Image (cartoon, rainbow, N blue to C red):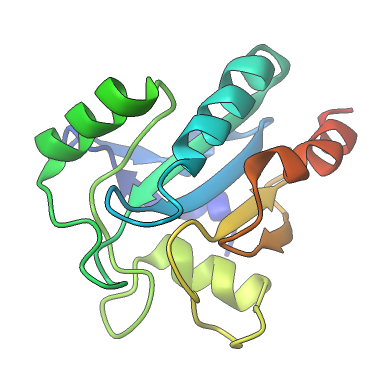
Length: 158
């Protein structure tokens, strides 16, 4: 199985294959609008704006599994992200990242890059960096600021 075999649903309800991002460095992050780490949207957006022309994409996956910190529907999430952080990177439908209803993308990433809690996501804003061939390279903790990922991303852009 490859990351490119996985289908995801955009926040607007459109199904797309992750194969669409083949040849790009991908940053996958589970997000939430009412979390102490929510200001990371700003750093993620800056990363996206600065590197999107260099084949880097940020993919945001809202999740309400941690303290009910993403209670909104798709429109409310979109509006919040655009108004408060100017988010222009792709957002996807709200998903589960742990438990029996774990989305296949996060099941795959957790298997490939287990964290300190094994195959669980610790909290909102856990970040995964995938190289241009679809290989998961590194998992970053929720508290890791997006700018700390830049050296790795720049190395993978080559």
